[in-house]
Image (cartoon, rainbow, N blue to C red; front, side, top):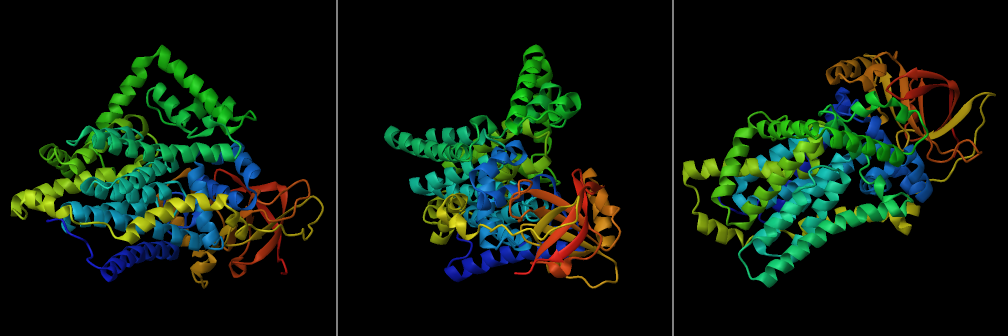
Length: 574
């Protein structure tokens, strides 16, 4: 239970980090082989809904730069452009292979979790740290590893930032404090969530027993790190030609749901479907939803007040949703924080946890646990401190004063700080000249029959696919081939309307989310979003550029977005 390094030297650190990354990769490869659907990843890798949209956003960052990024979905990409550029860097590193993108992204997340594991050990010992690892890893398995969604950046930046913050508070290191708070701010701007954590973090740093000059300097450093995350968010929006109101514009949906009694973000679509039939941009829709929400708040304030109060109580009953029994340790952790309130790490964790709780009044009703991705580590640390309290009381394992003195001598490895720097750098790389190294060149049209349109796509890469085959046919997960029967079983377990069309497809069938590579002819441009179904197996063409012809008026229901039926498929010669 005593604070110590989890991995004393470089070799031990490397072994621990590789073990966590290997566990993440084993999980991913395992679900690809079983065709299990997790969240918005059908078969464990085929992205739909928001996950597929962010993949398109990232591709357009690399290929088309400003205009095409801003125009996708009427400005949809500009809600959280930090993740789009972060994902674009990973796409560039992997040659845009979807499977390798998921592997590299999961490696970043796993390494960030390893950072938090070691920081927790330096604060409260290895047993506490192992619990942190387990809870963080289980969250990543459920909500992060298989998907190209903002939770990936939220968890990675959040875990790394929290690890640096714990060390900064113990050591009084302002450089770590700035980098840690900047990572936390980036995490919350990449995956919007419990924003009230940030001002309470600054308050925790301000209210400490030290000279005023040092106190103000430390607080200014923390505020500077917090502001930097928001600065990047709004700088990216302006750079891509958007308006400041585009930032987190989907919050308008949540606010409307609260204003009518906590009915959820989809309630606006039920009450005002006319907003989505007009040709408004994403930002314009958000502005109209905000106006409607504020009207409800002004005329019926008790309705939203009741919804907020119910959400606060809901969080206290289950502060780590999906983790049975964790609420007991969470409350014990709160008691431990009260006992050690004078210690800056404990006090700051407690105030940040209060920020998560107060924020939950607004966000907990929509999206489930994943909305807490950026600050999941805060609740996990409080749970871990509850375990630490029990063990130290039962076993009398440590002398508190000695442990605090010892922990102040423990520092993070330079590689841990380097990982945080790499994460931040990844957000900026697609906006440098290096972007051209990953940009794709348009491919000339191969020609289609009269009345047909053409998609030219590189299968398995920026245009990813899933191939449904019969039970006894040979399959290769690296060619995105899965058992149709296994996929159907996984779909029923997922039980979401987004997946129903997959169950109706006869094997063999190939479902393609196409990213257009055809040279512009006035009707399509590179990066256009075209989705197709081919009645056959295109797995053998994975990694190849293919021309697919289809009729724009022939579609099948696969998800909530129509898919066209391809009539011909031919490989494009290099």
